[in-house]
Amino acid sequence: MTPAAISKIVDTAALEVFREATQSGEKLELGTAHLLSAIERYGGQDRPTVEHWNWDSLVLPPAIKAQLQQLQEVIEDPEAARRFGVEPPTGLLLAGPPGTGKTTVAKVLAAQAHSSFYPVSGADVMSKWVGES
Image (tube, rainbow, N blue to C red):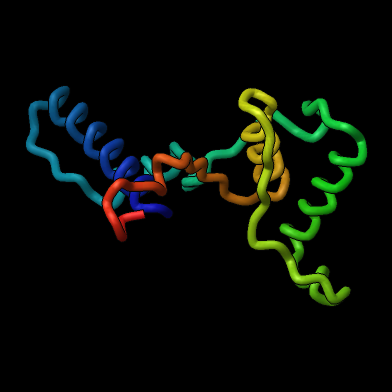
């Protein structure tokens, strides 16, 4: 899990312990059972996915959709691509004006390929200080 997900799980478990202590009036400590309960509640997953979307939900030209579905297959089984002499890509650049669905396409691709999707904006990777970007 990512550090953010672990922090969320610990906070959730601590809040549950606080609720129990408030109701019972006892002094309680955060334990393994509380953490496991919090992990179970969140499914132990730290990756954001688009659960109710699939390829049929997107309005794309058939040729583009077919290419993205081929990319999905490569992401899911990179060794099969290597057997055919194709080196699996390490990224994908979607370009276009704002509001055209680039992020949605990326989320659906990640969800359908059972991969993680972490949105990053230019502000997240750029800094005015030299060496910080």
